[in-house]
Image (cartoon, rainbow over all chains, first blue to last red; front, side):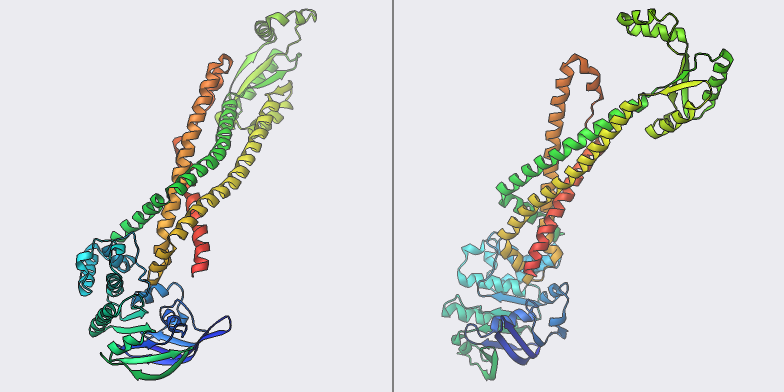
Length: 223
Length: 299
């Protein structure tokens, strides 16, 4: 599903990723661990074509992301759901409208939008908040809405960048459970985090990234 | 179709959210286009006047005093057969004198001292409708001047030449002012769109990350630019119409300009539509310039 071959990336001579080679299979759940500045976000941005590697190749679902034309990038992103630490929800739109955005950009029909948005909201258990503004929700609920938006069009990959950074341990556990549910439906999930507590919640493959270098893999453990 | 509703609603939200900027952009664009409109109106009216003068153009073919009656008849036949001649009538020497006395009664004594009637006989020729342009009349006059029995051909050439030259200058000024002020209009609308983009940069960022194409992101801003351009040009058209009516009423109140009042004309409906269309194009151009610059920084 995801393959990186000798990928390197630098900003102003500062090496962010160094000769990274890894493979993530279809339906896998992977934790990408590492301290702030380790290169986790850069790696995720490269997977959605937001950044291009200086060297090496990146493949997502067989497509060489680094060589995609700018006009092809949106179509790649429609197959990848993205969850951010800062949620990035539009405050002037309702929860329903926020979740509907990925379907709108794909020009889905009204009926399809209604059906899929309600399904996604139900999956993350915020269906009853559909008409509210994101600002009126708790941080945990906002992150749920963000996850609903990421999964609403049935992505093949879900990338989450520090998704629990703003949450307390209890909400963190709930969000990780949601990711597991999404993964159980066959979606490949990659969660980037610096929080060791998350590792204790996930008994899955863990990749450790320190100063742009990938450390031999370890296994997480369910709490 | 929900996506289409979404795009139009986003454009409307942009306009409403930045209400002050929107109003300032519309008013500034309106005044800019009004300046262009004044030149366009002047040009249209001068062209209208030139056409009116051309419609009314009369060419006077003065005849040699010694020309016998048979030769005059022969010349009349020749002229009548000419396809460039729409109509003509003959004015004898006596008729010319009579007309002079009728038109200038206080100056008629000037001719008394000369003894013999000095005014020549002439043909007053109205060019055929298709040959009333200045060039056609010029060519025809040159041809007739060298005909035997013709002393001189006169048709207020200097006045028509001067008007044609004035029209050319106004045309040039209208184009130059139009181009410069259009650039100003593009910049005004472009800056408004840039402010809207800046205010909604996070939304643009989110749309990009969830797979929106550039076109999808840009359409609301292009619609916004088009709306600003249309509103600006429509307001400008209203200002022009108001100014035009005031001007017409003013000249109508002065007795000697009565005839001019009936001659001045506003832009035709098609011209008004074109004016609003140009406003829309300028608005879209402004949006595109800002979006291009925004795109360069955002990828």
